[in-house]
Image 1 (tube, rainbow, N blue to C red):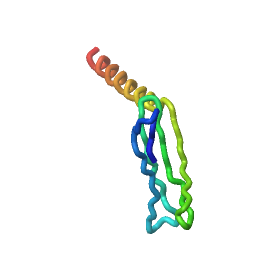
Image 2 (image 1 turned 45 degrees about the vertical axis):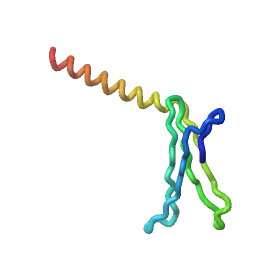
Image 3 (image 1 turned 60 degrees about the horizontal axis):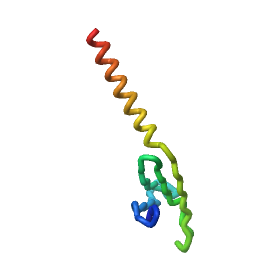
Image 4 (image 1 turned 180 degrees about the vertical axis):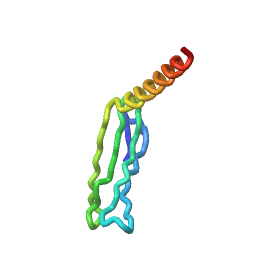
Length: 88
């Protein structure tokens, strides 16, 4: 599937289903498109027997990048606190 915004192509998402020998059902591989303000997750839920119909699950999660940014800020703050405490 192609991700477009205002007529411009931003990326191509290719979710998949994989069959494994020891699994009775296929395992879905999610493809994601990461942007600073929102992430798009696309998963292939299933395919009909004759492969004419596919079930696709699209999830848009806003502001997830800020969660990662907050974690990085916490790590930097912890390192700075530990360094300051070691020198006192």
